[in-house]
Image (cartoon, rainbow, N blue to C red; front, top):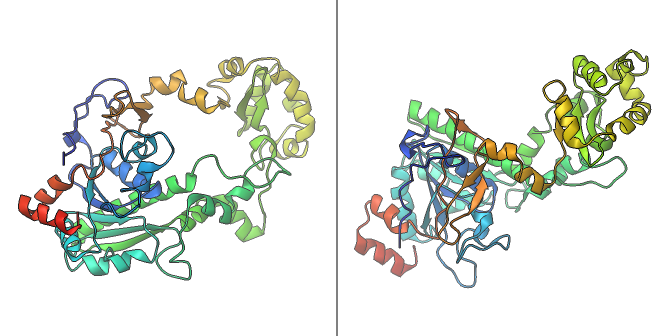
Amino acid sequence: MTTTPPFPAAAGEGRGGGIAREGLPLAGLRLVSFEQFGAGPFATMNLADLGAEVIKVEPPPAGDEPPGDIARHTGGFALGENDSQYFQSFNRNKRSLTLDIRRPEGRDALHRLVRGADAVLNNLRGDLPARLGLDHAALSAVKPAIVCVHLSGYGRTGERAAWPAYDYLAQAEAGFAALTGEPGAGPARAGLPVIDMLSGLTAAMSLLAGVMGARATGRGCDLDVSLYDVAVQNLTYVASWYLNDRFAVPRRPRGGHPFIVPCEMMPTADGHVFVMCVKPGFWRAFCEIAGLPDLPRDPRFRGFDERLANRDALMAILDPVMRGRSSAEWVALLAGRVPVGPVLTLAEALDNPYLRARGGVLDLPHPARPDLKVVASAIRLNGATLPGRAGPGYGADSDAVLAEAGYTRDEIAQLRALGAV
């Protein structure tokens, strides 16, 4: 098997600005991850982008099951064998090891890896980590300082521990779908798996906190993150209003703010812009630019409460004015004085010159597609985009990772013969 090539010293817009791998802030952090699909891989990719070494453990081929992380076979845009654009969106900068930890030989290999690692992360069903020996109770015997992060649907305890779960289910049960959409319409999920992403970021933060504690004390721990808990946590102020005053936030027209008007999508000659008059000064500036300087003195529209109570009357005045100019014209007029953003299609958002100028599109050359592109990390290091290397081929680093753990070539061959690798 071939190993992933050394991290290139990339340069240029969207290529990392010349940042070398050893110069990244998490260089020296090593973690082993049992991950699949989105939430777990998103957690570790964010850490890998910042320099962590991520050893992605995937199951060896078994029967008719698709090899490795199911993300390799998801989405329809294949990149050769056992790879896809979906997989590359969550797995850059990692290494891939095939290992069956249900076999004694595979479990021994895991323990060798743990001795040289800071953390082990999984996004398995909640009842599986203990059964597979991936919790701190099992791995602390190998390394007391190991940190075990468990990212599941509903946690590792309770009546739902064995339930499979996905982002859409969390959006549904935590109230996200009921909060989304126009008044009077049915519930709607967000267009992207936002709970997966939030859960991945929460798990990454938890892992870093655990490692900091372990390095200070010599003692590791279990850290649990669940999609359900993350979804509920991110209800934030909406939850506070209901828990304390039984106020259930209603949907507002055009995706508007529950209490502030205008703070919503507004029609233009060729589409919509989102205008946010969240401060009195923004409201006055908006009216001045729109050619309605007297409107803030109208008793119906003077303050937040008045504008909320008289929203329909206000929109009857504003909509014809807004339709008199294009979205680009309104953005140009309001920019810097009133918070405004164009409402773009997906294609317009990704072709946006502003995105490209910020280095928001990362070149990720792939053997099957040298011109492969993905969105870049949102983090900039000293002003530069973080570098990227294509996600690993299935099992591409198995020999190298095992050799680093002390296995000889003959021992690795024996592991393969036993089906452990």
